[in-house]
Image (cartoon, rainbow, N blue to C red; front, top):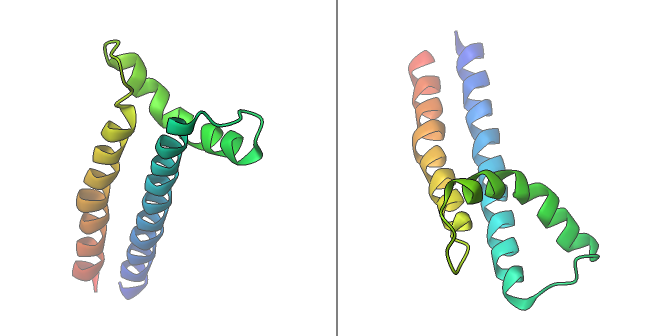
Amino acid sequence: MFVMANFVDAVAAVVNILLTVLYWLVLIRALISWVNPDPYNPIVQFLTRTTEPLLEPIRRLLPPMGIDISPIIVFFIIIFLQRFLVSSLYDLAARLQ
C-alpha cells in the first residue's frame, strides 16, 4: 500500500506546485494590467493565454463594475484548493502508509 501512498503524495505535491505557479501568473497579469502593456509582447501574450481561461468565466458571472475583481476571486479559489484539496491528498497519503 506504500506505493499508492507515495503516488497520492506525489500528486498532491504536483497539484500544489501547479496551483502556486497559477497564483503567481494571475498576480503578475493583474499587476501588469495596471500599466497598459503592449499586447504584442510575448510575455503579455503568454500571461493572457494562460490566465484568461480562468478569468473569463468569472467575469461573465459578475455584474459589470468599474474594476475587474475576477483575479481576486481566482486567488480565493486557488487558496481554497491548496488548503482543502492538497491538504486532503496529503492526509490521504499519510493514512495509506
